[in-house]
Length: 531
Image (cartoon, rainbow, N blue to C red; front, side):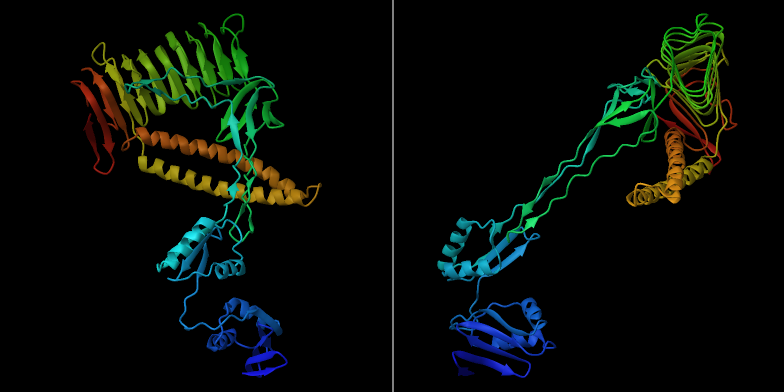
């Protein structure tokens, strides 16, 4: 070491010098290729106490010149003297203090806190307690000394819906019985009605770490609702722009025109033909007909009449009294309270109370499982399954049930294909959404490419909704279908019922109770399950 003009040179070589000037420790960098590790090792060899990190040295060396590293403290009596340790963790939200036994220098501890910028949330009681423990000869390990205030993220916005899609599904009573009374298919809407309301997101509040830095919060995201024609936002309220019915395609809600017959379909109305859904508040009387492309919801009953839904469903709240000439035909489901003396054709039939003297043909299945559910003196022809609570033969052989069977494996392959296509379309929609947003961000005038993407998005959205409905219909079918053909009776089937399953006949000639039969395609035989 050499001294000159109040300056003490502690270490010197061509690339750098370490010196004490006016009580300060100074690093003089002459070559930026200098190794910070080498400088740090030289500092540690000197008989001085100085807090300096490798990161700080790297920053100084990269600039060249003289840098004050801190005050030169008195040499320690032992080079192994332990200093307080401050550890900041939890993303800057917590500072932990460790003290060696016998530490009592509160002022120096506070200097170390200031040097590490621990300026917020310091617990004075914890600091005092740590010093007292150390003075008493005990070691303090990782004691929480300061805590920041974490940010409180904003809540995402939500959508409050004032209407729900009519489920048309059976209600399970507490005793396990099933009812189909809630059969409404049509949710009416009037112009100006509020369909949904946006609840705005909240901004949240920022936090602060132990070093006093602001920690930003995540703001809540606005909720989004997909909707189609007949609806528009007015402020945060989504309102109907016309009278009609609410229709859900997947998660997209729209208002479409609805034909409402306030009373009966009779001589006052004549026969009804409509390109859309129809709501009949009364009864369809003898000799009249209702034919629609959309759903047909009948809040009364059906007499000796014809009812058709070419693309949708039919629901009859008070059942069918057909007098031998009623005919109901739907592309999808038919849901009834009961039916007698009627011909019924559809994809799936669901009945609450009974089928009496009916002829039924379904592409998928029949379900008669309400608490009074019974099939009596009827012919049932179904491709996939028939499930009933009870089955009666009033005269020997007058109840005939035939389940012709399907290929469950083929149906499952179709289901997986639709599901895969659904996922592909969903990915395309996400990509189109991003591209359309970019197109809007470019300026007020939309380019041709963005316009084409918007048209494609509309088409793909329709396909997406149709695919979702198909996938759900397969899922519901698989819940009822075991093997390639299934028959189930939860209660009793009387003797004399003629059952054929996948070509196998005379299966329950002597009656049955709590029985499920299905055709196993692998073993090529009928399997019976009891209970």
